Image (cartoon, rainbow, N blue to C red; front, side):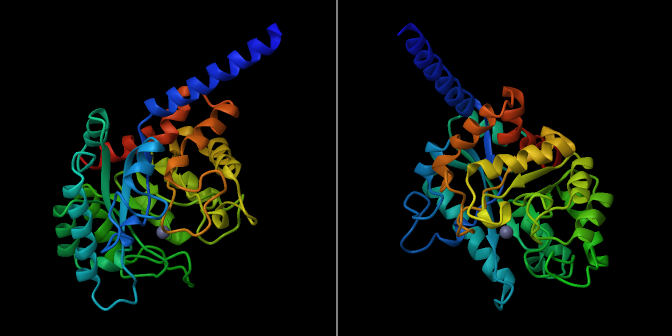
Length: 331
Ligand SMILES: [Zn+2]
């Protein structure tokens, strides 16, 4: 009887401490496509996808990167991007007691300290820059703090992971990287080709991120990163945000354990300082079972504790590592 009581007590204590650890962390999600859902019938509170404000709060998310994704087949990239930027600010105005924009070093921690969610505005796909540095500079003035260099299409900046031959970073791309370094925009290499990732890692003066990608060695998929790419990103002091899509994590329907398998793998390769989370919620159709939406982030913390990760490692994976990069880049 005493043993049973002791075990129950131990289980309750460990559940409480996991919960406490999760709540104390500044959890950052490096990628979602939720802005594409927001329209006439859905706002940030009522959105019926993976992410909305109640789900972010339940999941303990303190910082969310919102991507503006513009279909490369659409006619006017700039106009479509401006509409998504307008949606972002309309939503933040509407719910400004709950969510606020993070634009410079220290903002994420300060907004989180106030009990609000920090929102980082990003663009997914350098085609929106339309080969013009003036547009890039204007995006920065509009609050863009992260740019995913390519989406699934190649553009004037660089080659995507789906294109052959792999020409890597193009001459205009070198100018873009230098300008992003100067302005203070986080360089995101998810969706980019191997040569693009290696070229950018070589010339960027700042840490770079792959906001929503997994390890190719565990799951051979063109969207995933080879060991060489992971090491190159880590060498810039950057981070890799693990994607929650089953198809990037495994060759079958994956569970939350697959997310932690990829974390374990990258830890062995480059250490915990270069790992983050990039759910890709509202952009993916097959989230792992166990983390079906943003309210389920604590499941990852539970598994990390179960696999022996210590408090410092968990806090850095959940958000500390991304905050380090954001604060260094976005001065
Ligand atoms: Zn994507």
